[in-house]
Length: 495
Image (cartoon, rainbow, N blue to C red; front, side):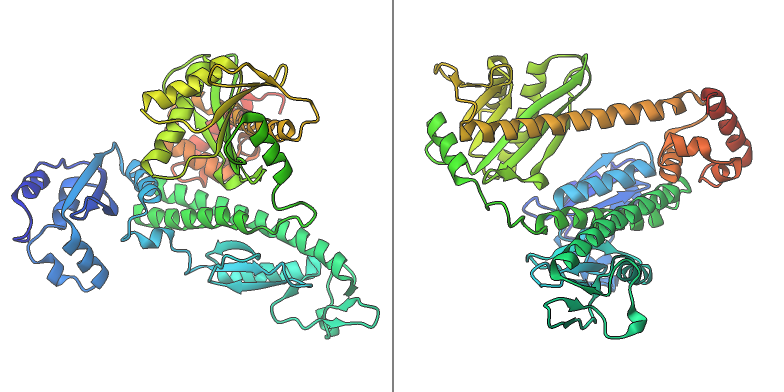
């Protein structure tokens, strides 16, 4: 260890277990600057403190990291695959400065569509800008992406970067000069409005293609982990997370609908007046609980900004503190989790919190704030039976006219929270029902199970697979594949 390493750090390193885990390196201010995984925490962490190691390292970035390490934490896990997944989760959570490869998607290609152009073109770029363009990607396979764009041009009749369309005397556009560039999916001459419909269809296809490639990368990652090729699995995981992050960002830059106002000032001011707020609630968050007879209990939080859904800020919660049917406890838990996090991250409160429910649910939400010793923002409940506004103080319930613009905005917010919660609940129930059949097949552990679902994506596709196709899944041979095929056929005799 270097002479500068404090004695207590040396002792802590010597006391580390020879087991898998994740380590978090910190600077002298306690900030997490690097997160890594280890097959052996003792061997991996001690390597950072070996005498003279920094001078022997060629890469300046790693030398700088070692020079900044003043403390560390470790988290033990049961296996290397678990360490791999936990490492990814912690890097996404803390975004350490020396884990830049994990979130840096500039090495991958993006597709940019500038929607301010009269005839938007599909261009390749590596730089995302905060403009009114739509972005798709990142894509790791540049050759495949270029072939896909060529197919998009032929199928949908859209323009790529090098196109030079010509305007005709009647105002229409001739898309290509060369007859060899004829398109398959439409007329060669088109109006700007008709071309806009083509762009929308191509964007929808391209977004689906992004997600299709993402699913393929996830499957490849699971297969690498099942083969214990953990370095390759980590590379694929980084790529998957970069793609997920960019897909999430892409939705932020979607073109606004020109037929709708940027915000509904009249409705916001109506809410302000009805509730006695100091200002219009530009940001509102609404919570809803969803369950089926106490099972699959989940919650949703949706956010409106300037009266419109801000879907990037939507959140879904599984209830962790208890099992059973108790809407009040569930509401207290999710409200507490949401605003504890905002407080820890020093992010601003919403201007108004809306609870789907009556006085009991409102009281549970308030209890969460009091338990955290936090002052709640303006908060109300919206009881669906009579569409009554419930206040947390001594004010009587408020009944607004059905056509009241403020009530209609609150209803849209509440209904969106209800839809989002029910969708999550249905997704969980559907997934559990589909996958539960595998629980009864002996010898199928979590790694093989994950590899199967990654390879075939659904039980239905797995049932339709041949023995040879199942045997090609990592961790399977012909014997086990045959047994699984027989088991699934017996489980589904009608198929």
